Length: 315
Image (cartoon, rainbow, N blue to C red; front, top):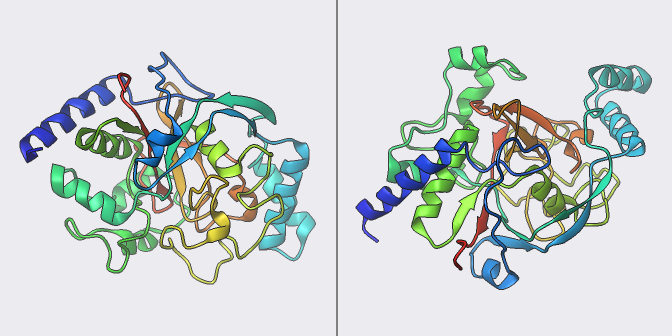
């Protein structure tokens, strides 16, 4: 395929995605559902770097027991005076807005094993001329939910089209939901089938399987299982660096490293439901059931993404 044909296909698909707001499937879907395309195990196996999650039911959400456990292990990680620390976490109601524990049926899905990396995203911006990941100090302040000062953002900033030294295999960050949609459209223009963000439900099943476990490795917190606030090294890690954070179907970093955008949108399509947890989070946030939302234009050092592949409807 010539570069002109490739870019023409990219912009055609991108214009369609942006016109209709992207793929917004999931439990909190607003508006019309897109056509659902069934994916077989054989089709997924032919896509390099993707894992097959079979169709069927899984246990989604959390119950009071799980949420109490999340508060307890988070408090234990930050303070010796556990009762006071837990009370502060409960006042913020961090885990109280999770979906109630329930059984959900899902179609099969072919999910990217690794998070999209800096090297992956570099190929996209070099091919399309899209801006490199980043955010100005003024925009970062205006965005709110600062968590970290802008000085902590600077090591993640790209220089032109070059990602920070030594971080080719780290997850790309400082990209928005719409940037992720544009990347998916570009990938779709290059190969048969189409790419999109996973729904929150698809992501959760990939992280916890069908047995209702809290974490990818089970239901007991393990401090060495992922990159989190208590890790000796701060910042993102190379993708796949923590085998215990591999989901039951073979997808990596399903706890820790970065939060992930999903295609599940709320607030009239203005916020994306985020799944996973980031390298600066407490243990309770790293459960598969945890979810929170951020505006679709957000760019942060804690946010990344991965994709789903599905065949064209005619395949």
